[in-house]
Amino acid sequence: MNHLAAGETRSHMSCECADLCRGCESRALSVCGSLEDDAFHGLQRLNHPITFPARGVLFNQETPVRHVFTVVHGVVRLYKLLPDGRRQIVGFALPGDFLGLALADGYGFCADAVTPVTVCRFSRDNFADYADNHPQMLRRLHDMATHELALAQQQMVLLGRRDAEEKIASFLLSLQKRWARISGRVSVTIDLPMGRQDIADFLGLTIETVSRTLNRMARDRLIVIVPDGVRVLEADRLEAIASA
Image (cartoon, rainbow, N blue to C red; front, side, top):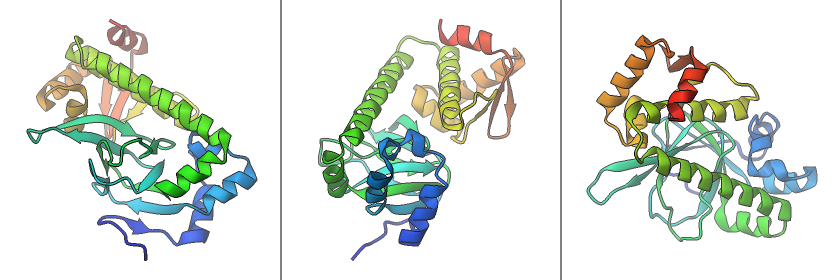
C-alpha cells in the first residue's frame, strides 16, 4: 500500500503521468531525455508524479533513501542542517534537475519546495535496476553528476574570499544561465523565486547584507529590482564584478 508524505498530492497515476510527460518542458534536460521512445515508455511506467505545495518537504536529511526525483516544474531548496541548528543552503534545483541518487543509505541534505513543485518520483531500487539496463541513462547520470560537482566547486569559490557584491553578481549570472538553459533563451529579467534569506543562506551572508547590496546595485544602475526578480541593465559590468 502506498502512503503519501505530508504536503504532497498524488496525481491521477497513468493518464496524468502520460499528460505530464507529453507536456514536459524539461524532458530534454532531464535523465529521461537520453532515452528513445520505447525505453522512455518503460521508464514512464515506473513514474509516480507528485505535486508539493510551497514549503512542502520532498525529503529530510539522513532519512532512508527510498525515492529519486526529477524536477518538472518549480524550484526546490536544498540545504544541510548544521549541528548547532543553523542551515546552509547548498543549492536550488530547477526543472530538469535530478535528486536523490546517492551511494549512502540516507539523504545527504534536506529538500523542500520554494514554489509549488511537480516532480517525477521513482522507487530508488526500481530506478537503479532500470538504469543498469540502459547505458544511455547511466551516461546521462554521469554527466549530471559531473555538472553537480562543477556547481559544488563554484560554490566553494563563491563562499571563499569574495566580497558580498562579487558573490551576488555571480549568483545572479549563474541563475540567469540556468534559466536560459531551461527556456532556450537568455532573458535580461532573472526570476528569483527564493527569498533574500535563502540567498543569504546560500552565499554565506546576512539578509541585511543581501538587501543592502542589491539596493546599491540598483542605485548604480546595474540592475532594476522587479517583482520576484531583477532586470539586468549592465550585463558587462555585472560580469566584470563576478569575475573579479
